[in-house]
Length: 172
Picture 1 (tube, one colour):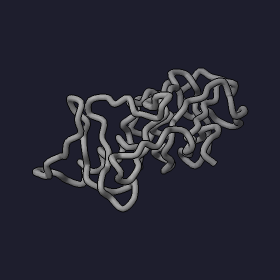
Picture 2 (cartoon, one colour):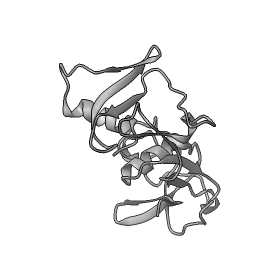
Picture 3 (cartoon, one colour):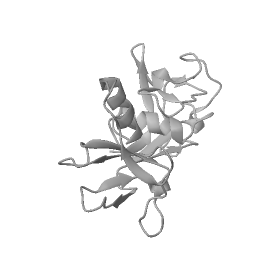
């Protein structure tokens, strides 16, 4: 499934996360950690039902670029002031977003927030895409800048650079 109450495992126990400060950036990290792409959405107030047992995290504040919740700013494990009515949830819906053809090449996916009613992307400076690959998951890295798409020089390109691009595209 791609949605539900978020539970974490720590010191031999499963527990929930309090929804204080919980937002779509936190959901983005959870979806990435689970290997799911799509349109991350944070849900509060035990939207997917109240958990039981310990509430292990509170005040989670991710920037959205982390690889796991453990890298996010948060309270210490087990330090919280919540009840289970505040259990956090996420939806990592793979069916949200729109696909736009790229000059006859492989289509690429844009998050739903960037789709116009006409399925044309509202592109921000620095938006990245993959072009010329055999699938939407591979290809030449291109960046949108000043109204046009350009390529990226490979001088100094490392696996870390590729990881950043993959995260920008919503891959794990």
